[in-house]
Amino acid sequence: MDQQMAAQAERVIGPVVTNPQLAKRLRTRMRQFPMRLRSSGLVAAFAFAESRSGNGDPLEQAYTRLCEVIIQHVSQRDLLPGLTAQSTPREFLTMLTNAGLTTYSRVSAEIDLLAGWLSRIADAYYGKLAAAARAELEETTERTVGEEVEEQA
Image (cartoon, rainbow, N blue to C red):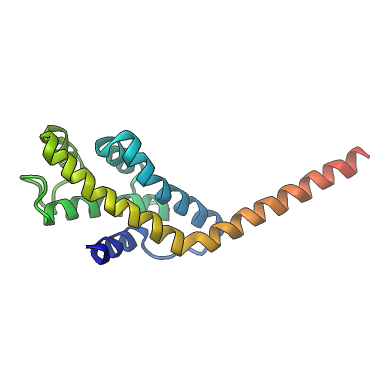
């Protein structure tokens, strides 16, 4: 099960981006998904991901893949009656909203496992690039502050 979840999380992350700023955003958003899921619930977390999905930058594409992976996982495991791998995000949300408490809880628990792997894989892929982006920002800030101090003196 862990191998399957890790592979699905890796699919969500997609092709590695080399731009440090974009890598930092991607890592941050994918690491936030488990917290969003636990604090707001699956319906709200999925709706958020769907609202951010698209074909634009790699982050939008990752959100698109996240929604697809969730739907495919739930349909393959037959956790939500009537859901198929071809179901749309809207159909998934409707079915999930109408699901009973036991079904909703089981689907949420499965997706929570995926979310944990998503956070780990995002860290593994982008931890160093995100750190480089942070260091670059700090260096730029220090230079700017130093220049302002010199100008005031």
